[in-house]
Image 1 (cartoon, rainbow, N blue to C red):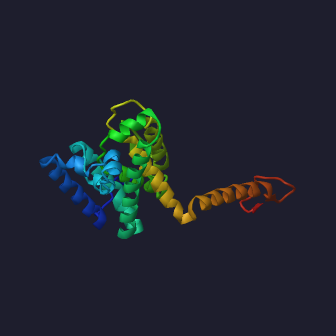
Image 2 (tube, helix red, strand yellow):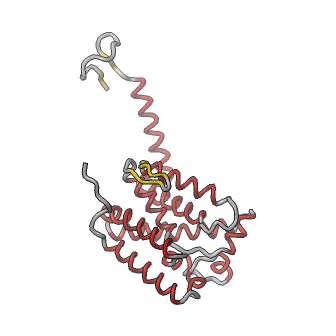
Image 3 (tube, one colour):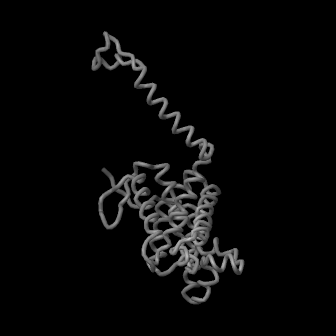
Length: 242
């Protein structure tokens, strides 16, 4: 069996995003003061009306490893999704997830809980909200594709990989102080990406109808199996009639 690494030739939108993220990281490294100005701070967005932050925070990163991991995921996942959807739809989805993750972070900061106060004063940077949206879309379209969940070097089907990441993000959103990871932003990217993908089935209502229809069809199959030969099962390949 042949083994290959990477999704192949890079696509236009992914290439542009990689260049933009790397370029902004260099600028950020040379001028650290822009981090507060372009990063995401719920307090600054709502009190000073720095409304560009839910977009610009996507192009800043905390350190070199943060940048490398996000860009690796963007390349590995984004190339296949851009080929599948086309450049325009891919960019739309990417920014919907990234901006939606930022808005989720702001909403969490307004909740009447202790952890919300830390989110209110925090400064979030990184493309992780959009990357989590890409993870969800990848699992949605390629649910059985194997993915590695570090530090466990065991391939896990993409659909379960995303469930694990979502559970970690959700539980960690209520965890201890000073983790340095914007779990609410990650969770927001997953939720917004899921809601966006539901459009293809008519939104949440359409998804519920789809699931109900599948359940009813499964019940009908069990109820109306017709078998030749006085109810005897297990004969030839053509004995079971649907």
